[in-house]
Length: 100
Length: 167
Image (cartoon, rainbow over all chains, first blue to last red; front, side, top):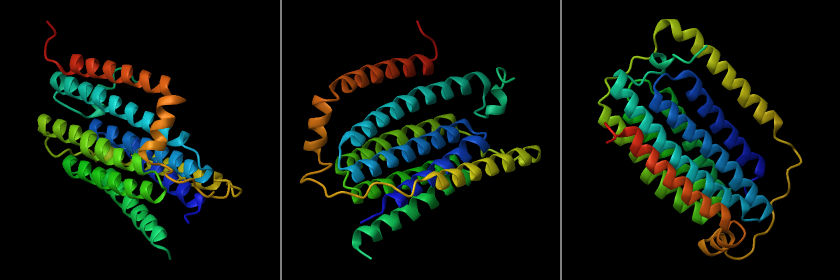
């Protein structure tokens, strides 16, 4: 039997790796991938707690998160394509007009 | 060590290594996307160990099968040159980001309570399509219907954003 602490620990580590990617990379596509990784870490925590309590609610939440992730990727990559068309770049440094 | 534990720790190590490979790979975006696929499949193995069979199947179909393919399509469509994103002036920023993320990990790991509930015995068929489907179509039917609206809105939005000209 897997202890719940180890599942949550794995989830925390994956979330942190995703955070590193989202904070340090400058390629918009890789930033989107890092956000996917963070969503997956949250999913893992949901599944771990659903297993511990023997309830299905966590599984349903994970399905909703998967739906939201699919929507996010579709819209995000649409923005990336439109950005590349206008700026010939996917570097976030080139689109910092709204940054203070 | 039981087979369950073996698969869990093996898949966990694989997921962490390939996630690091995705984040630290600055040369090749396609290789980063392939690392993401490996992470997703390793997580599906973890889900199977945790008795979430339906979610594991959907993880492979939706994440490894659809989402990463969309990433690969966009990477190849844009025809990016190898991105040299490690300009010297960003070294400091990168170090700061890495330190911050390490701090986040440490605080997460420290915050895991020691008094987590004991893992319970499961009813027959836990995590299968029948049990999850019953929940999804009875207690969570509103969320299910709203998610279809969300998918429709995202589809229209993606087409509008990526289209060259809207007539």
